[in-house]
Image 1: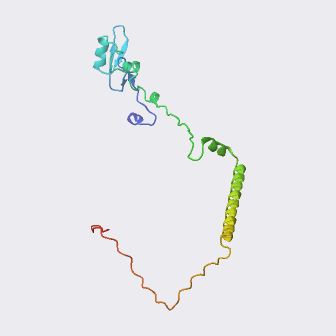
Image 2: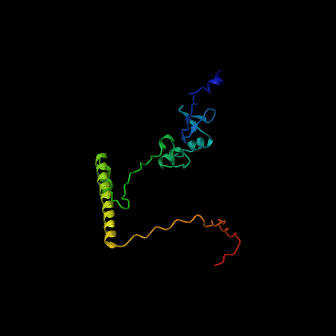
Image 3: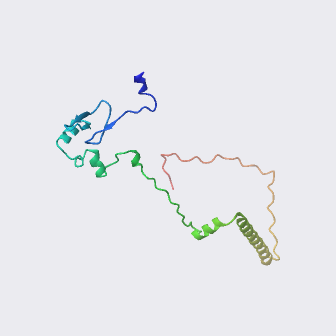
Length: 180
């Protein structure tokens, strides 16, 4: 029953920290050192124990967690090292044929104003087309007042023999030389 309780969801392993290096010590690892004044120290391995007994400063040893924290080497805690995401900034530029000011004014217009301007421009375009047609008609009348229109071409006679259709010329082969 105890063995299966270790795998229950939410059950976590109890870890301690090495008092010299600052690394995690998992169950079944490390050793405890008790000083003459009955103070207990827990170390990960003999390297840490020997460093402590030689009275070395863990802040000066590059492999310890304390040194890495002091000198800002890498992230010691994964949650604390989340990268800040930069927000994208919206940038507006002028398009060919329209300045930025024109684009902004069109965007700020209401739907009714847009429809009114469209209708006005449509009317103006229609007027222009009508005027062009009138001017063309008037120039034709002025240019040839007595000239007659050419007679329409006579229809083809039904008695003329029909020409047989020929197949289109074949494309030259890839390897064939081209002549000019």
